Image (cartoon, rainbow, N blue to C red; front, side, top):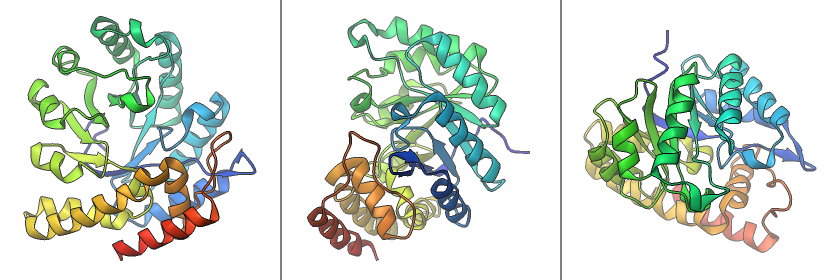
Length: 294
């Protein structure tokens, strides 16, 4: 039986493929079957790369059902269950648990960003954790949450809760600072390939990186090199991965991640409108950038 509270290794933040602006569930299944053959440790579903804010609740639940029904037994499944209200987040969390996720992950409410102070964040986190049937992981990503940042002070106050087990850090705050502020049982995950190696050195237990959708084997290799203390090779591979990440995610965000997946025989497709896919010229540039990792 899996220990659902334990998070480690490389986790892919799955994209949601679209075909003619409708969710391509067959494409999603295709990707899962491909990733099941890798050494990825799990899947982060309905996060930023999953474009969850562009999905209806019905679509979100169907995506979860497909991932749960088709994931390899050893892969951990984490679902983002964010909503702007505590009430709705708890409802979505309980539904995700019923579907079968191992953990849930929550962004902070952010529509009324100026009102989301440390007290509000702590209340939100604890209220959700108390009601969640599965462990709760925090998702710290100010770039997609109206600038709302989970502070070290919040982590000091909530990291000891029995059902708050960790955090994916995609902020510019050094993950080491969160590690130093947290309870010993709290697990930190790097949220970017740019900082994955640095965060592992600081004590992170793994990473959730968009590039894991594109080059899962390379991301896993870096993690294993580090775990085996082969640091010289790890640093060499890390440089290639960081350079590529800046030329994929850092190039055109989710549009580039999805197109890179298409180029490498996964199912990415275009992002949902109003976001745009890459132009022909941008695609040629991306293809050239991808050749650097071979």
